[in-house]
Image (cartoon, rainbow, N blue to C red; front, side, top):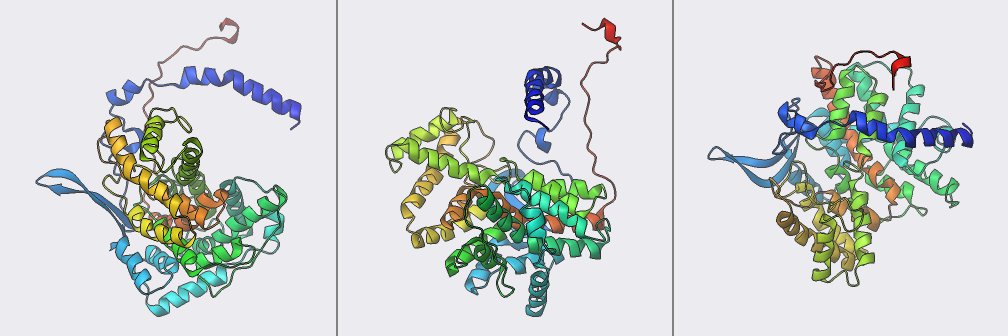
Length: 455
């Protein structure tokens, strides 16, 4: 398309945008009139029950004397409390990504022999087709790593002779391959962008079969392939905490919906990636980092509680940062008193901040973490409590690890591909009907008007 044609297309779209708004807007009161649960949630924020799962569970309230009472948040993977799972890994000084991935996929914790076999399978699968990096990843480098990741996933389908076979064994093979290669697709995509668009040096390091997913990710990302033990363990923890979340999140629901149509694994994963990249889902941690950077740039003394409190008030009043009225990293659709992932993450992030001499930066985050819930509770009418979510500290963590912002959401995807795979397999096993919710039309009926009689 020529530049002239592009300009004409843009002008046409600009001129007709208001027409769309005029003819597509629906009176918000009608949602209440017809009992429509917007966002598939009721007025108290509870999700509409759309399915059953064995994979994970979120606990955010309990029944006390017949009443629903908020409680400290808990997250369970296959019935195991996530706090106990990551605690065991830390006590035994082991990397846990592969072990927890096995648990989510197969429903049981592996024996030592089973874990070794699973790790070997992932290592054997951690390779891309010949010249794939050159011909696909480097062909059209983009700052949008999620789009690059989606393009790579869909192109991998062209190398699969059994792409449309939805038998369990074949889909499991495809899922294991994607779990193994996601770090390569993301990191190589970033290095290609950094080289061709930013004119920086190009590094394509091969993964080491003896290393964990977290170690390999840092090894492939860094020019000198080096990292500390704490860095790798914090990243391993981040991958575990982002691996799965209750089954009802947007991208996992997308996985169920597209799987129910009978589509292939690559298309399902591409759809989930498209969902995850949204700033209301996987892109939230970038907004936290940007907000905190604006806070430090705006305030004369970002360590002064009075100035920070005033900034948070201005955020809520749409007078600061992006003027959306949000304090990013605060609040969650399900959790109220606490997000267990944030609680677990916080201690490790503080340790990393000490290693990186970033304690002053961490103290600002800690101040906002303490003050924001109180300010939000006073300023807003909310049906439940407010607490920091996992995104609040994950962006800071990735920054301290030297991970560029372009890779923040892809790292989320590197973890969540495990959960998506488990849910895709579960949907295939239990699938009965295509998922098809109802939408009620509120458009008035009209008589056809001949084209010469239209005003």
